[in-house]
Length: 241
Image (cartoon, rainbow, N blue to C red; front, side, top):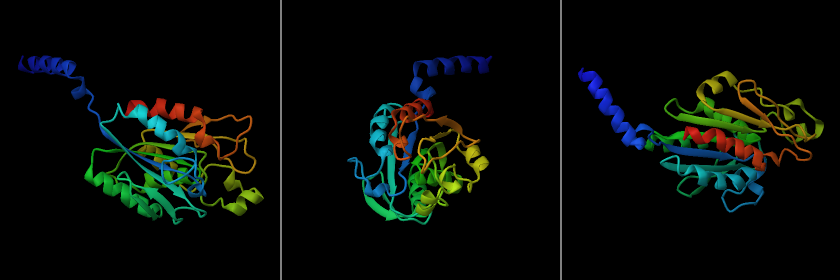
């Protein structure tokens, strides 16, 4: 009898206090551009990069009402391939740094150590998408992955010569990662890809939720600023915050 009375009281309390029933968590978004994205000055959000930065700032405004606190790290690459390639990145406190994928991993883990309830979302384009896959595999188990978004992912085995000579690695999703392990850890994995670019394009990833973006014209460098991509990302991730 006491148990049922307790449940009735608890149910009434949660109904009167919806914030208690659906407690908001903190979210850290790690946003990564691709090859040479540090040299494409297109936005006031540093480090300068490609379309992931252009649309993220608009999208995050819609997310602010869902999570108790949203922070983000923005990163870009110069002209080398990860994971050892030099990156420029800006931490949530606004400080700018240089490092590689390993250093970025350390920064994410240090942030989560101070805020252990934080969900980490990784959104990357091209090499940055490969970096997101790598980080999901390598971040410590204590880091809660909220989602992984790969936008036309390209692995480091595709270099500038591979683009020129049509390497298979420049026309498919990366094949050097443990995709089943990534899918197991990331509760949401959305993969966007296109095939309109004869020089550089990705492909489906069986373990991910795949979205083909049809371009009448539009190269690899345009897909990360396509509104269809960001509409789908916002719709998918919003309920998880």
